[in-house]
Image 1 (cartoon, rainbow, N blue to C red):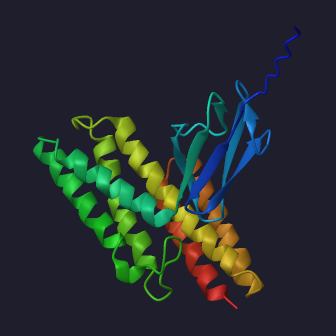
Image 2: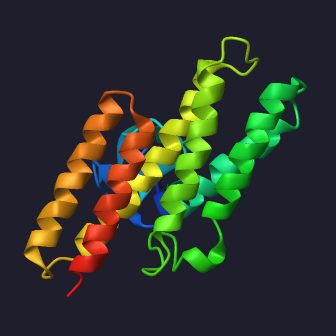
Image 3: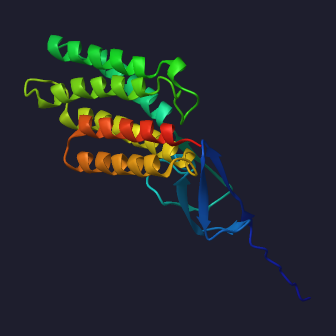
Length: 234
């Protein structure tokens, strides 16, 4: 007696969830996949946001990331805006402060934490990516004072805090300021052309100061870019 066997290849799903504001492209982009397929995921943040990392069946911050299909998979891409970036730095500074026993290091960290806390005053923010137009510049000013203290620690050869840790805090804070300025410039589209040009000029100067390692100068230029953009609003 003849026997016919029929085999069906199992198909699996890859579900991608986005937290925050951004998108994820799948390559190849299929509704279902076969066992062993490798899918590349590329996260793209919307203006004013940045990609923070993957979670679920893909972890880390490598972008693009890859998922090998061996069952149904679920991946979450998280995007954060400048407010959350600053809050995360504040949280990390607070955790670090609890471990520091050196008196001078502790004093400077306390000052940095104080100023960064002021920059996150809810009355200065509209939402994740926008500042109040009337007093939003205080966010830049307070954060600049935070960076000043972090730079003092970075330059202090007696400091017990690793340079890479301090530089990481500074880089994250300055990136948040650029996001705020860039968002304001985008919002000002169709407004006063001269002021928008000036805002873009200040934004470029901020980028240049970062390359020079002049982080407080960069913050000033991003603040100026934000102010010019606010004044340019239609």
